[in-house]
Image (cartoon, rainbow, N blue to C red):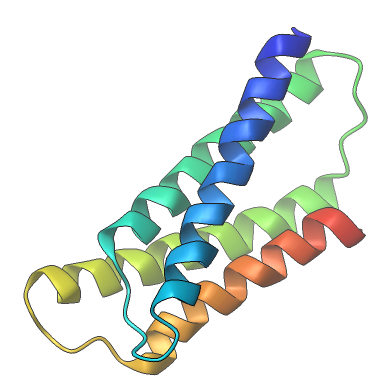
Length: 115
């Protein structure tokens, strides 16, 4: 069980790194890349799996924190989906949309680590 938990945490952190890393890579000319949407989906799936694993085990789950992180993650996924659709159609992705994806990912990381 510990190996599964550690692997899910690894994938969860990797998803955040993909979102923030691609945002930093394009900070001068912000856009949303398809990889950011995939990172957001990875975060959602692994986050839900981690909560389920903790609920099934003897881990304490802070439901308020999980709810806030889930809400932020859903917003990131929706914004990243919209942005990657525009990117794939060669339409301009607004810098506000692109920056929202990166900043919200950082906020979600802050909630995870500082709460």
